[in-house]
Length: 148
Image 1 (cartoon, one colour):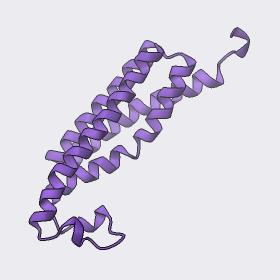
Image 2: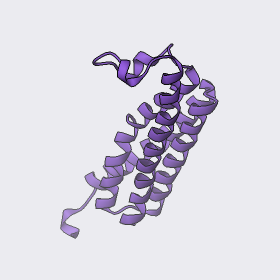
Image 3: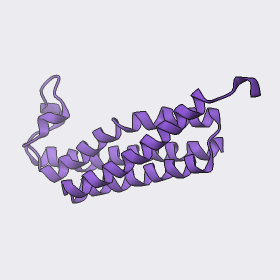
């Protein structure tokens, strides 16, 4: 199951790149349309500086990309721990559930962004991640080194 548990992590990495491209593909034209441009940007400027400058719906993609750089940083080592320790079918299923929910969360946030629904998707994905994390702790703390 080692390779199977890594596949969801690889898909989430790829999805993060898709969101990066989607963000750039909508933000750069919006920046140009606002009369600004990258060459006019102040030194040390950050993405947050575009709040209120370009449409909110365009910024939603950037908000989601930032989210993909936050909680999934817990998912990746959890998956690696389970791959090393030996993941079971439930671990693989939970990892896929987490990734599927994160992708749904991204699409929802980038397009509709109704917070109550987005929060529910986030909570469900967090539950899947929490169960994975508990299983990773159990796999490491309860491992019997004498068996190897």
